[in-house]
Amino acid sequence: MKSLFKWIAIIFIGLIVLGIIATIQEKSDDKEALERLNKQTQSIKNCVETLGNGVYKDQSLSWKLDNCNASK
Image (cartoon, rainbow, N blue to C red):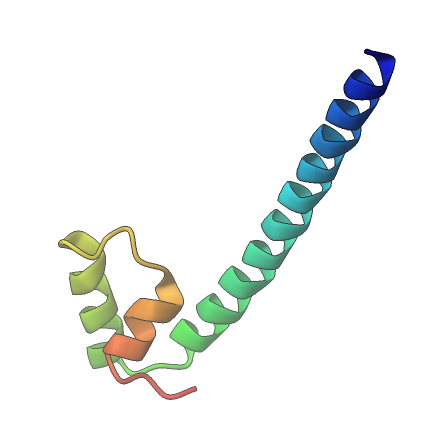
């Protein structure tokens, strides 16, 4: 029984570590996407804003920039 709890604790800690790593990666991706947005023309920014208000509001900023044909 102790072995079972030990493995459950190890798996739980592993999942927490994976969640932290994923969060850090998302923050760096968001920062890059914001820098990319700031370099775009007003028409691209308008396109991204339009996508952000519609059906695609849950998509990432990088996705919206790609679909607005923004330069990288």
